Length: 308
Ligand code: 13P
Ligand code: SF4
Image 1 (cartoon, rainbow, N blue to C red):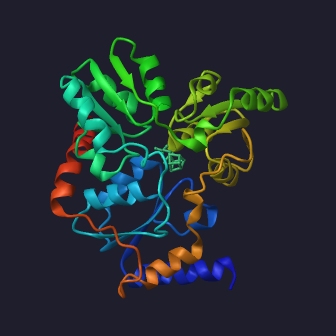
Image 2: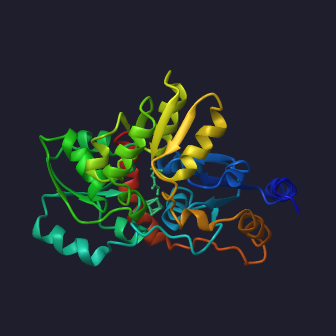
Image 3: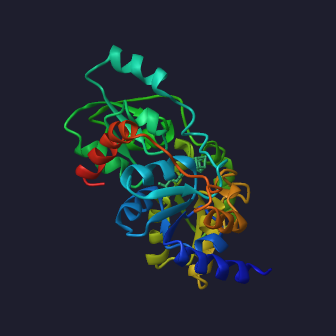
C-alpha cells in the first residue's frame, strides 16, 4: 500500500469514528498531512478543547494527550503510540517538589506543560514555551520555582531580572544536545541565514539567536520574514515542514541529528491501527480519574486565565 492509499483509509476511518487527529509539529510530514490540527503544545491544548468530535487521537507524546484529556474530559482521548513519552516530563515528580514547597511556601511553582498530570496537581500555574514569558511577567508574585526545564527557565529569567526565579536541573535531551560550536559552524556555512531557536536549548546557544520562540513561533517568524535563509535550532521536522511550506526559502537544521526519538515513534500505521481499535479496546486510551483531572487542571486553567 502506498502512503497516499494509507492516508486515504485514515481520512475515511477518521470520519466514520468521528475522531479529530491532533499532531504536534515534530511529527513526520505524512502524519501532519492527515491531521485536523497541528502546532505547538499550547495551540494543540486549545484546539483539543474546541473540537466537537467524540474522540481525539493524539500524535505526539503522553503528557500532551493527558493535557487534551484534562481539557476535554467528556471526550475519549487516545495516544497513537503508547510508548511515546517525553523524557523531560518524566524527570520530576511530586515527591521531589512537595518538600521544596514546604521549605518555601511563598514561592509560586510554575510548571512547564511538559510535566505529568500527577506533578501538575502540586503546581500553581502551567506555561508552554509560547506563553512562559508572558505568564511569569503576569504573575503577581516575585518568588518563583520554575520546573522542570532549566534552559527555558534561564531564558525567562534573563528577560525578567526583577523576579527571583529558582531553577532545578531538568531539560530536554534533544534540545540540550545542540552546542554553540555546531551553531557557529552552521552560521559559517550559511552566513546570510538567520538563526531561529527554541528556548529549550542551552543559554550559550540561545544567545546566538536572531529569534527565540516555540515551534509555532519559529514557523510563523520564518514564514513572515523577508529573509530567505534560516538555520533552525529545534527538532528537524520543523526545517522539513518549513521547506515544504516555503519552497522559495532555504532551511538548514543546525545538525541533522536533532531528532526527538519519542516524537518519531508514531508512524502512519500506528494512526490507522489506533482508529481501527477505538471501538474494540485495542487503541491506547488516556484514562484519568475525575479527582486527578480536577486537581491537575487547576494550573492549566490558571495559565488560560492569565492569558495563555
Ligand atoms: P512547543 O511545542 O511548545 O514549542 O514545545 C516543544 C517541545 O519540545 C514539545 O515537547
Ligand atoms: Fe520531550 Fe524534548 Fe521530545 Fe519535546 S523534544 S517531547 S521536550 S524530549
